[in-house]
Image (tube, rainbow, N blue to C red; front, side, top):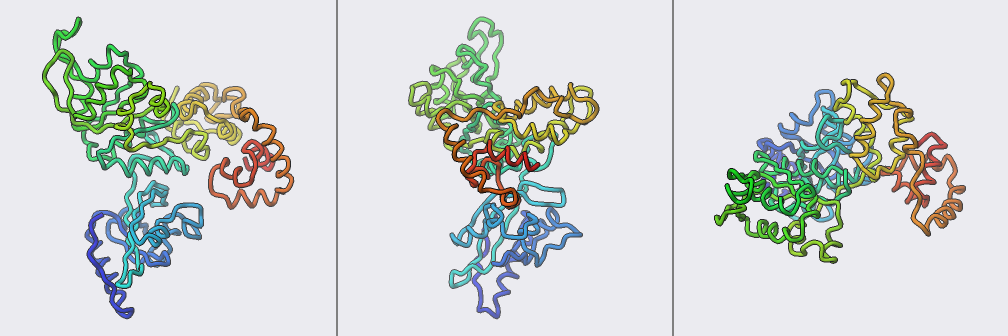
Length: 455
């Protein structure tokens, strides 16, 4: 955000003058901005905000920001979310957070930065809020790109928004099937290199003999079959982003050459003595435990520290089960065999949300592709899903099953139906988090909710 002018509040009678001067200043800023008082009321909005977030049938001046943005009846922190105003008030400095806002276009991810305005006595008298819509992810069903609204997903997306404008190397960590390549695209698209290429290198698909020639290219005659000079993937990524997928699979003998590339920004084609200058932003990803591999001598420690400047943990699907209806709708929008537009009935959706998804989003996509073929008509029912999907929760870790059952048996009778319904209605979070809050196993909670029709 542009630096704000130094505004010093006059005595109480003239307190409005600095705010009016600030509003006049923000009016010419291309970023959507609003001015808030300390009671969450929207005092003013610039033209950019009115164009992007305003609606003719929904007045916002004089209204609470949390009602306009979130449709809440209470501030965000009281509704279970991070409130940037509370943090900014505590620290007397700016605070930034990724929220899902209700906009004229529907729910959208919005990067919010709040800055306090102080008077001569260092008291907060107002706030300026800058809003930037996140374009590389959707909070609604979408035919392409990242889709999600769960807290764990928003945390990862918020980290991407923070690091993308910099040149720091990004390390995406997560299980197979969690969407690492889509997150790499999000880093690239939110960076200053979005106009350049994004070059994907599948490290697990390269043998040791191919790794160097594919990454750095080669000269004519460098080896048998090299009939012409060929650009490597590093050279192809000039001015853009180089995405090293499954970097944990890079052979140990090749890691030193990869380290030299990252540290020096130079490389040589196979068969050449000339040094080439590299110009790329590095994003790497792996599902492997690199720290453990370093300890066991399977991955170079110096390379690990170079690529892990900004690690981003991608949540498995079992930690964002509330996103499954959104993801299902998105996958079904993307077409399939016969081009039919399908939906999923309530019973089938309950099965999908009860499954643990060891293969994550990739497994969900494959299950839906299979269901397309078995669906009769335009609705996917339980009969179209793989047999047993979502029926049998996985066994609990050895040694804990008996203890968990005993604790659940002791606690469950205390929590009657009315109290459980009240807790579910008031709680904002995942089923796992609710189970922990109630002192139940997630398995026990699921059975209780299912019996009440709340699963």
